[in-house]
Amino acid sequence: MAEKKADVIFHPVRMRIVQALFGDRRLTARQIADLLGGPSIATLYRHLNRLVRAGVIAVVEERPVRGTLEKVYALAGDQAATFSADEVRQFSRDEQVRNFNVLAGTLVGDYERYLGQDSFDPPSDAVVIRQKALNLTDDEARELSGALKAAFAPYVDNPLDGARRRRMLTFLLLPLVEPAPSPSESPEE
Image (cartoon, rainbow, N blue to C red; front, side, top):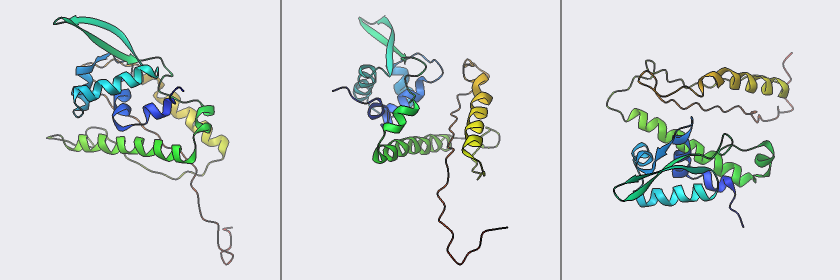
């Protein structure tokens, strides 16, 4: 039986591999290992092979290096690491929680690595951590989601050069589950 794409991607190491390849990046295993700074090269190859078998990433080039072939990896397409609405609907409650926990853990790790630098300055580095409650209809929430996607779309394919730093953008827009008002509370007028 074929492994579910979510089961392959939502793992702490494999999630970081996928993120390293965002933005049409093409990287060797050594470059990915340097970016991740954690798993052994043997462990990394196991994760890379699993992502390749699942069709999430692909070997896009092979180069001869010291008598062997060095593989270059990239995402296997624009939608390789995304999930359709139908796919998301198929996730069980436990899978939803697991997937979110892996994503949240990756975010915590990213922020810890940022703060672990010799020097960091969140305002100067344009770090933004904000949470704001918005009162939106479902249509307004979809409109906002589309506007946010449109706002960052022109920046998605910027080349990484000396003037640019890679930054990770993460959105979380979800309806809050609020307790029902108690019978003694009257609605606001």
